[in-house]
Image (tube, rainbow, N blue to C red; front, top):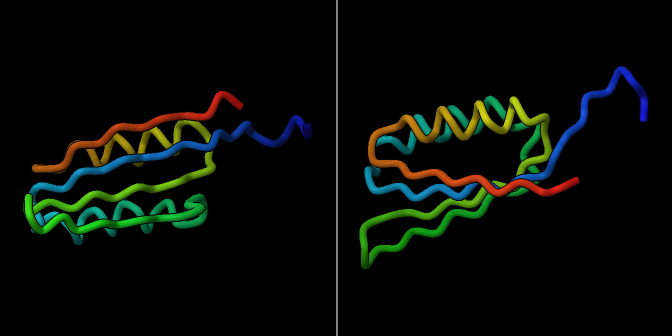
Length: 86
């Protein structure tokens, strides 16, 4: 590994949105990490009036933590992140 390259990890950021009004803010936060996002899946669960979003990201730990933290500070949003070991 090149010593100039920082180590990245793959992570899944799981987001539950209970307040639809924050959708624009979520998209803005995710846009800042667009270069690191491998995939995104959004599922509206109309029966419960919530949305579930899964983001797969390959980035440095501080980038993943920053994105997760910003999302988690939004009102009506719950975030959990699972990291790969490599």
